[in-house]
Length: 246
Image (cartoon, rainbow, N blue to C red):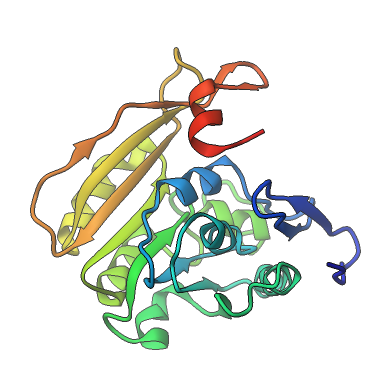
């Protein structure tokens, strides 16, 4: 399907259902964390899903291919990213299942209403504050650092947006795990499932995948670690088998 690309934009193959996504090499492009989260998330038939901070729409688009969810909404504050996401949705003919809305995560419950979603996914900024950033309004800085929203903002709004028993899925960094778990409990999104992601079998984890349950009881399952590479540039058999990467 033909689509209008702006200068320096490119179409990247998502390796599923023939889908492609519009990205700008000079801006923030999706990474392994988004792909892993889209597989870790569990979405049942007919469920409504909200992706907070959707960027160029990678997670909602992947979830349409991997789940039977009824409706996927991506919320993104940056105009340029939201525009690319909308065009990617149209390019893939997914307008009936995916909607991209430009808006602030801190106002998400006001935008959508309380208890309006079955599932929330998020691949939020990992780094605290804006220390060391030359331009705090740079696209990459906003995606990586808590410039426009914090972990607390995300969990507070998610607690309002999820119906009782709704599920929350997030990818983050292990160095903030204590804070993540304590704040999830504070906002009554009980941690239920967790998986550490290691770049190599002999390296410490650099990502953590977490599932929470709105109003759930206190019990968490820690899944076996996921190893991404068996050697430099070569994905592990586990990753290839579970995630279908090439």
